[in-house]
Image (cartoon, rainbow, N blue to C red; front, side, top):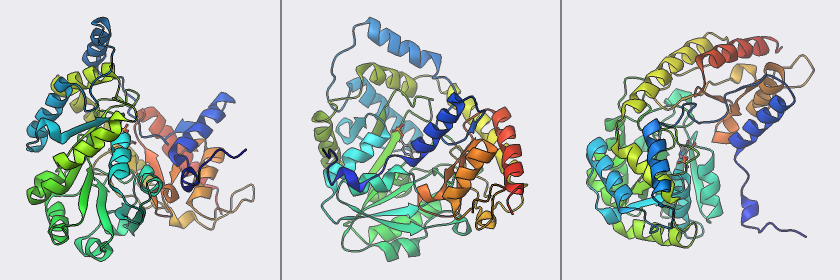
Length: 400
Ligand code: PLP
């Protein structure tokens, strides 16, 4: 019996999860693998956030909440946008979900008609295109390689817009490249979008706080206030507060849109866990020193990997401005042959070689819509990163 619907068959499982599972299986067999495949902070969730969750449980705060969340969480989100992004939102302009991923899911489910186009600059986060496809949309991918500083230009955005364009979806700081759009770059994109009133903007700002270089983060709606009423600003607690397993994302946008998102939430998961919501409110309202400490560590690691991987011949490295990823171009190694005779035909083959020969788990650029690159997450200890640099250099040196 076939269970899979034609709709489910249009997408694949998350490729970064697949690499991480392969690395885990190797570890289970006793092999020592350095896993740079997952974008997940390696710190513990701050103690005051955990305590808020325990307290919520003890108070019997264990029931359904409204689909759009606890009033205290929505208030915390409204206050966050005001405090950190200079943006004013009303309580009914907020939506929450089980992770930013579910917000994206609800947003496309709620707005796409078959054949609608979504402009996605590549490299993009692995899930964007599949979520769009699953909801009947067509991703319109605009490739932006290292030579473009991994960013879409106003000209290329203009050229990608058609009467069918529904959304422009982008991510800054970027997974997988670490690129951050400056306020001026956002304004220039905004000028193009202002000329096309049928295009809405989805700005994924989940790595907002993780800034490693000199370019400060700017929220799109802040840079382009005239477009705020057609912008969905997406964020969450996963990355900033090391809360990936808690599952809480949030977004702010025009009421007509958040109403749709909240309706879909009411008929899917009802609401994120009440306990997680209490914890997320504590994260947003509480002391922010955890974030500063984590970011200082990411910065040091970012410098370590930028230096280490730049010194490996044939890797073209751009220092990340934010997030916790390095995305070296590896064209020099494509077409080479491994000691066991296998041909490195593309970046997928290279990542597979690095895993089996070097015992380093990375994700190939193909998963993010551009080749040939590999993505390395530096959300792991400096010791692991030093080991990864050494192993990568050794494994690559064996290719002929
Ligand atoms: N957006 C980007 C760019 C991401 O990298 C991720 C997670 O890796 C998400 C969204 C999803 O985050 P969440 O844990 O809030 O679902």
